[in-house]
Every structure is written in C-alpha cells, then in structure tokens.
Length: 380
Image (cartoon, rainbow, N blue to C red; front, side, top):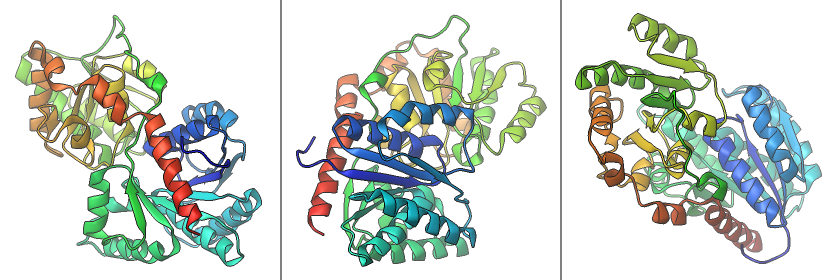
C-alpha cells in the first residue's frame, strides 16, 4: 500500500447489512493490517444475529471502535439527533479521513466533516453512493429532491468514490458531472474468498442469496424458477436465502404457486454455508451498483446467472450469455435452463479466474483507496 504515516479512518453508513457493510468490513481489515486506525459509525436500529456475528469478526480491526446510533432510513427530524450524536463521537476520534457510504452516511460525513473543518480540524471527506439515492428516477418528485440534495452536498465534500463505471455514469446522468474530485475504484474481496467451495450432496439446482426486498428481485427468481421447470420438463429445486421486509410476501407467493416443497426459504447465513447448497447462484436484481454477491459467487467457483443491471456487465462482460434482461422472468428462465442443460456452459461463459482476481481483490481496492485518501488529505 502507499507509504506514509498511519491514518485515522472513520467509516459512516446507515444500515449494517448487504454490500455496503461488506465493503466497509473489507476496507477496515485491509487498512488495519497495513497499520492504520479504523472506526465505524452506523445505525443501531437494523441488523440481525447474522450481522452481530459479522461485527464480532471485524471488531479486532476497529482500533477506533464501533459506534451505533439510531439513523432512520427516511429523512426526518430524527436526522438532527443523528447528526449531533455523530458529530460528538467523530470529533472525539479525531479522524484524518471521513468516508461516508450510502446516502445517509454520505450526508452525515459531509455535514459533520464540514463542521469540523470550520473548527480547523484537518479531515478529508469522501462519499461513495453504492447505488442508494441513484436508484431514484428523475421523473419523480422524490427523485428530483434527492438529486438536488446530492448536488448541494457535493459542495461539502472533498471527493466522490464510485464502485463501478456504471455508478459514475448514473451519477453524472442524474445528479450532474461531479464538481469535486472523483475516482472509480471497483469493489474487491479478500484473498480468503478466492477458494472453491464444494457443493453438498443434498444440494439444490439454484439459490438466491440476498436481501428479501423487491429491488433485489426474489419475486423474479421465483417466477423464473417455475418457468424453468416447464422449459426443462421436470421438477427442480431451489433455496431463497436471506432476510428482509418482504419475506412473508415471498413465502405466500411460493405457497400460492405450489412451490413450497421445491423452493426452501432460509434466513441469512454465512456466505460459504450458502454456497455449499448449490452450484448455481442467481442474482435477479432490478437495480444494483456493484453487488458483492456477484464477486463472491465467482471467487467461490460457482456458476453465476444475473440481471443485466448496474456494474454486473463490467464483471461478466457486456455480451455475456449469463446475463438476463432486468425484471424479465421469462428471459431469466431461458438462461437458467441453458446453464442447467448445456454441457460445459459454465466453463465457456464464466470469466477467467486469474484476470478476475487481479481486478477484483480487496488488496487492490484498499491500495487504490488509500492512495486517494492521502492525495486528497495532502490537498487540504
């Protein structure tokens, strides 16, 4: 990693679940191992026992500690209390780097960091959207308001970091060309994740792993699964693994479609345990930035089938046969059937493992991130 004095780095985000949480955990571990001091400020209202276990794993790398305060998802008066509590905590940590992730984390970092700068603290303020507010549509009232706020907050930050080219282009299209410095630094996963995970003897044909909410497409997966059975002409098996606000709705859907015995519904679990249940992972999202499940699937030697959204084509290739059209259950079923019935399909379609690791490893991500941190801090 770039040489220089140790940095004090604080990451701020709202919900400790999903890709943002994974991103921060990887950065914290990599930078801590390189001799830097790292802390986290995040929401105390979300997360399950699964996330608590993940926090316990990352605590040894958080020399600046873990602070959890109430940060609500929607914008409201409660945000004033969150800003005040965040300010007091972050001020006491005396960070060199404040890195906000997601819309709420980005807002807190830029507001708190700017307040510290007024008091002559030398701190660099970074923001990574991770999709978040960029999922809104410009044609909606809410979207216009969110993008206007993003544009305003740009003035209070030192740099934007995008996790894929798609995210950068979406930001320019919806918010505008950045008026501060910016970089694209692809998500990466740790070396320990680049290990083939064998499949259990009682495996299923397909799995969905992720948040149980419509944005991530579990309903598309369920519909596509039923269509795939008709295409291949025999009963199949699958698992939906995860937690989220729409879980009960999907359980009802499975029962109504008569799939309750062939599609299991399991809570979130360690990703390696999930991968052991199948050779094929389906990512049917309606919108994404650069989802970690895509990187984890390929690193584990599994076959990936995904929607053509976000930065996923940057991983698989824009013309990959493993990509299906967004929200199109029929097209997804077509790809799922091909992957299951065509000999050698995965070997011919999945990316080269060596080239994939060289581009999407956490060590590469962390080194680029640290170099950008130092560059912007030196400019203050």
